[in-house]
Length: 533
Ligand SMILES: NC(=O)c1ccc[n+]([C@@H]2O[C@H](COP(=O)([O-])OP(=O)(O)OC[C@H]3O[C@@H](n4cnc5c(N)ncnc54)[C@H](O)[C@@H]3O)[C@@H](O)[C@H]2O)c1
Image (cartoon, rainbow, N blue to C red; front, side, top):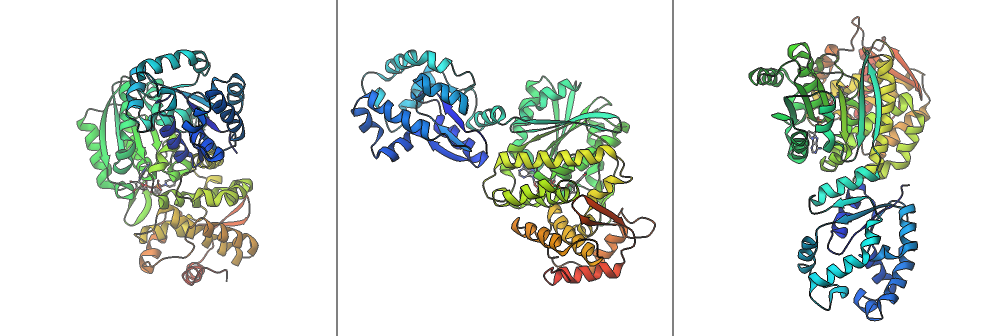
């Protein structure tokens, strides 16, 4: 439960619109105080005012105290917090913001509104407003978190509010002796340019961007980099998995060469896991390694793909066959980018979150069970997503820091991926997270079949995946293609299939003696509805 956010400011400052945008981003309840007053008193604001301003303020005071509920965005009336007691209460109990704009802008906006406000019913608008602002000056000024709605668009103003109200999380990581930071929060993309300068970027920055992610968030990134005094060059990549191949890799490397990128040139990836993987491989290969910053824009890339320094492209129907280990200089995850991500993509990442919870955090598994419905709702609950991503990222960071080059412990993160990757490579319609969901359930079935884990845990995982609307049943795929991908899988070690099995929470076991016959049996079970044999 989070403290409510209250938005105040003079008439015409944009309280209702910006509050609505914040509520949409967070998936919180929107409460417009004036509408609430009308509903509860069953009188319109002009009717209440007709009984005298003091009468209206009295009603307003009572209702304003009553609506302070967690997870609510409150759009206050223009004069609500002139009352000292109420202002003190809101300063204490809410994240309180004041919107501001110039006198001219306020007059213009008020004049364009259909419903004229009672306070401006008499006299010319400009003078009445000036008098009103003068009267309330002290009260307005005592609210110090100010958002300038003249300079910022509605979306940017809402971002600025969320950035301040929802503290971002920074986690330090050290991979192979190289320190860097994972920074997650709402609106963090706006600080990308500043971060690049702090990291030592000079000259031109090379932005490798997923075309779809860039259509929504590219402008913010360009503005931030330009504002930091840096130049940029732009490489637009085909969406998602279509970019993770050698053609695109060579094309990108050729572009860097033609543009004269040198060893000090920064590469910035903006996109999902596919972009992080491709851009990181590019950065690790160009001139034997140039500085890299990742700006993941999908839930999966925020909790998984951007963390741990693995880079890859797919080749010859095998996932991630060609790749390197190459840590970035910084990871900047902006959860507001999730609002443009299709629900199916957002949801698919939950399979990786369930996986990490099984491997390392039983409490997180329970948290996902509690919040499952909100996590898959159409409305993105950014506060819940930030908590989930941050918690999952921490667990992954703990593991990869101990075993950067995947010699032991880090292999556990492949739980569900042996079957998952082979399915992903052979089913066009399956997203990475969905393939992991099927692979995870298959690994649980196999673990139970081998007497390693209780049926109750298999059922608990199955039921959570189903609640998250994630698949547990293998779709149509070519068996030949599946087994050839399995044999090419990088996890096939010493000619043995390499499987991760689960004995219980936090108890993962590496197995090298799983036979193809067992895999076939599990696949048959999956295609018949996926019940435990
Ligand atoms: N390196 C690692 O450790 C690691 C770990 C896990 C997964 N991966 C890799 O990550 C990839 C999957 O990543 P993913 O799930 O992020 O998918 P993705 O990168 O394929 O992106 C999914 C889709 O979302 C679009 N998109 C991206 N951001 C968007 C936004 N904000 N708004 C709208 N559309 C947006 C993309 O164009 C694409 O169509 C796989 O290739 C997988 O192998 C790597």
